[in-house]
Amino acid sequence: MTPEELRSLTPGVLGILVRRGADFAAAEDAVQDALIEALRVWPHDPPRDPKGWLVTVAWRRFLDAARSEAARRRREDAADQEPPPGPATPVDDTLQLYFLCAHPSLTPASAVALTLRAVGGLTTRQIAEAYLVPEATMAQRISRAKRTVSGVRFDQPGDVATVLRVLYLVFNEGYTGDVDLAAEAIRLTRQLATTIDHPEVSGLLALMLLHHARRAARTGDDGGLVPLAEQDRTRWDTALIAEGVLILQAALARDRLGEFQAQAAIAALHADAPRAEETDWVQIVEWYDELARLTDSPVVRLNRAVAVGEADGARAGLAALSDLDQTLPRYAAVAAYLHERDGDRKRAARLYAEAAAQAPNLAERDHLTRQAARLHRQL
Image 1 (cartoon, rainbow, N blue to C red):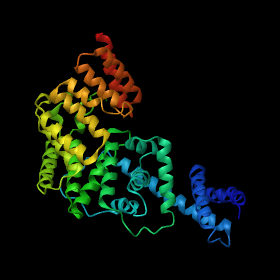
Image 2 (tube, rainbow, N blue to C red; image 1 turned 135 degrees about the vertical axis):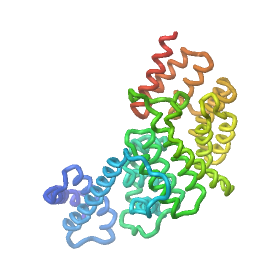
Image 3 (cartoon, rainbow, N blue to C red; image 1 turned 30 degrees about the vertical axis):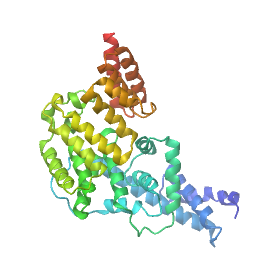
């Protein structure tokens, strides 16, 4: 059957799915998936009933997508619940799905992207921003991942490192983005910690708890973003901080340092300071050096530049920033902060305005806009 003949079956298949109860948009997506599968399978194994084959495969695709969307909505409805302290209940199907989506036939990057989209409930745009790539590039990566695993048996779970990366990105999106998934990521990481004895699992859990402890202080009464240095530290959750520190100390004692433990150590140093002025920035720079060695990440080096600026002065921070790509997300915001501390308010105001235009979410955009307006009033 030629591609043209195959496409001629589309209206009939689409109509059957709609009559079975599928909404048109979801049915159309499912039929497109079925057509892609047909182009892959039929040259080697043509069906006796092409239309019946397409209906069966498309309906399965629709059911899979509907279940994934329902699961995403359930997680969003539960997002306002704080993660309870202490041991977690036995592993549920969600965590198993994370492992199954991290399939050995996929590269780690593709496995993470697919899991974030299919199970984590993030949009392609959110995933692209997390990976610092264009949305179109990420869409192609996810599509390739879907094609790769189409038809394979999910009886070979992926590795722990890939699952940790997914949980980390889901938590970050829940912590900073439009969809609150932080509590769900903590719940799943707690479960993982009860089943796997691995220092990086403990490091990730500690990191999540230490960041989540600051949640209540991150926004003001008007809903605006409150920077770390300006937060009311009496609103931090001391129980979560204590738990995170204990978990981190146990992980570090095993002398198998990983990136999540290093990030948790930085978060612990922030949590240990009664006031922003008492933060041990010298030690934080040292941990960022360790983290840069472990990851070679430009985002890590960007955050390190801020720490250097706090420890050694704004000029030193700007020097550390000068080696980085200026198109890096949040580069303009960091540059604005360091230039303001260095006394160049005019340049800082311009950079805050640029950063606001590039902000990934409304809360951050509003905060940066207010910073630019504040400096303009002072000029």
